[in-house]
Image (cartoon, rainbow, N blue to C red; front, side, top):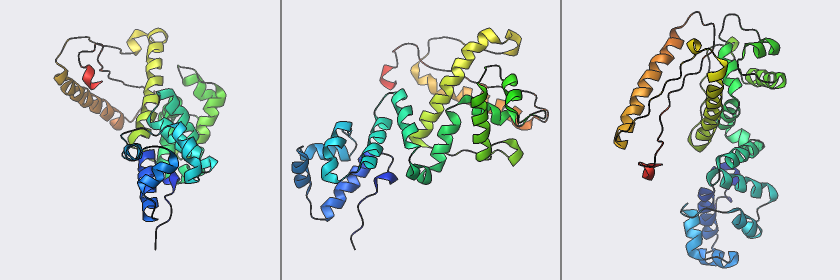
Amino acid sequence: MMPGKPDVYKYRQAHFYLADLFGWYKKKGQSMRGLAKKLNVSVALLSLVAKGKRPLTEENIDIWAPTFKWNSQEISWLKQLVLLEHSSVDAKKVAMESLAKFKTYNENSPDEVLTFKYLKKWWNVAIREMSELKDFKEDENWIQEQLIFKVPIIEIRKSLNFLNKHKLLAKYGDFRRLNCQGNIYKLSLSTFHEQMLDNAVKAIYKVNSEDRYILGQTLAIDGCNFQEAKKILEEALEKVVLLGKNEKNSNGVYHFSFLGFPVTLGNKDKI
């Protein structure tokens, strides 16, 4: 019995979907040459797109839709996948927001959606950690007063609803680890770091010097030693994390970042 047509909603990368779709048509007796003729493109182009060596474009999707009988929802889905793979960070964020609205995506990738929604607003993370404090009050006004970098009441209310819905506050027991991998996790984490770096700049002016620690060193090194520098920073962060795990009398929430990045193009081939 011949398997059904590939379900586009089960794919996270467009070229994998197209590779399976072309294979399905082939089993039905449709050659790549025949498909290429219908789509008015070369066989070579189809092969490159299916292998991920040539990006699928939004224009391709619009033109190919009648041949592959994609409906408006499937067209939208594919376009978001394309944006997620081949666009600016801002466009990727918009694409992820759109994907998260698809019921199918929420059902098939709940961890990805949860992690994205959790990390896209830094105060979700801060409030989750605040819930570990002995004097924590699940009250939006109290929380707003405690946050150095102010957040609108409506956003705090949304955050509390979100954290309660997914049982991410300390009252539900040990914090559960949020699982997410690949491009979605990288996008989510980059969004979070961007916000926290912005807060770090504000902290220079809002927080007393004795209550913050912003230290850096610019130096010339062999690019090969950057991996060793990363290892040193990772070991230091692991020690800091242990302080939190062993803490019994937490009275505040802190964010620790160790930065390391090139400011010249000497290592440009790796950037």
